[in-house]
Amino acid sequence: MADSTKKEKKEKAKKPSFFKGVKAEFKKISWPDRESVIKQSVAVICISVVLGAVIAVLDFIMQYGVGFLTSL
Image (cartoon, rainbow, N blue to C red; front, side, top):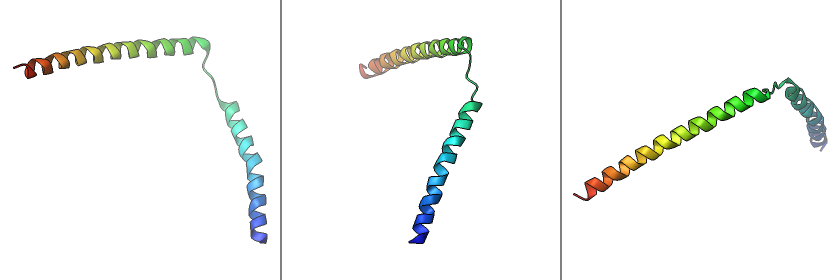
């Protein structure tokens, strides 16, 4: 029974040190500036649109090809 109370005390002692560690790690984060976030967001949107267009064209070509082959 004494062992279980010691374990509980150790677990309770670990929680504040864990949260202190999390707080210390959050202080180390260097957030990007507004200009950088905007540039990266525009790049992601542009690449997504281009990739979507490429996939749409390939899908259309494959649909046409399968339709052509099945109509023979």
